[in-house]
Image 1 (cartoon, rainbow, N blue to C red):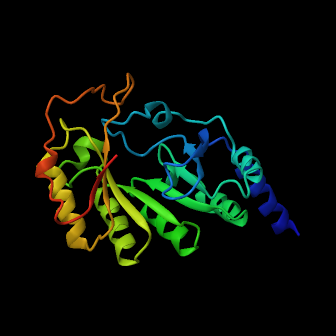
Image 2 (cartoon, one colour):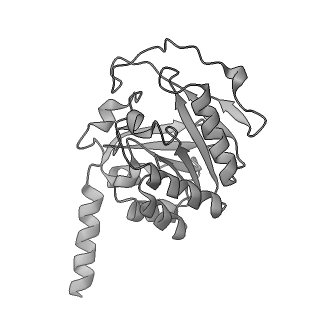
Amino acid sequence: MLEKQVSTNKENNFLKNKDIYDLTKFTHLDYPDELACIVWFSGCNMRCQYCYNDDIVYSKTGNYSYQDVLDFLKTRIGLLDGVVLSGGEATGKNLLEFCKKIKEMGFLVKLDTNGINCAVIKNLIQNNLLDYIALDYKAPHYKFEEITASKKYSDFEQTLDFLIQNNFNFEARTTLHSDLLNVDDINFIINDLCSKGYKNSYYIQNFIDTETNIADIHIPVNKFKKECIRKDLLKVVYR
């Protein structure tokens, strides 16, 4: 009886945590072929130079609790197909319990992640709590720390290998700022993905210039030559 009460108290405390910075109530772009909402988690374990969500990255707390989001989702059963967990970096939060409750309501779950919390991602997949992942391939290993301020390329690579080897439904994507990544860097990423057995589309996302990106960088000076990309190895899609 006491153990049950302790478990209930823990759950109630978790549901009250305001880890969620914002909630986008509808999107038809962020979850392939599905209507979804986006849950934006506060905080991140990287400091990518081009990041335009610095308000989310540096935020210590959010504006919504887990219960707030779950209450919203109850009103969208039958109207939305899925929930996108984004940020910031979602894997630093209590996703296991949150995803269980989302799945109980019948929603698909997509995770946007930088991949360096490999153990968390494995656990979610092994518990059948994720349906799709968008994995950010930030940079080749030789530029990874410079661009992300993180030394955990090997952790990212472990996640990438795990997803490929387990044939999990995911996409690899890179945000492109051509003063930071050049054609050779992107072709290195394409070659690396191919050598590991990745067969899905590879997405290149445009850098978004805002007044508050982390490194205070703006429109690239260097021109990116799309015609030099190795499209013979993978289907490359620009967003």
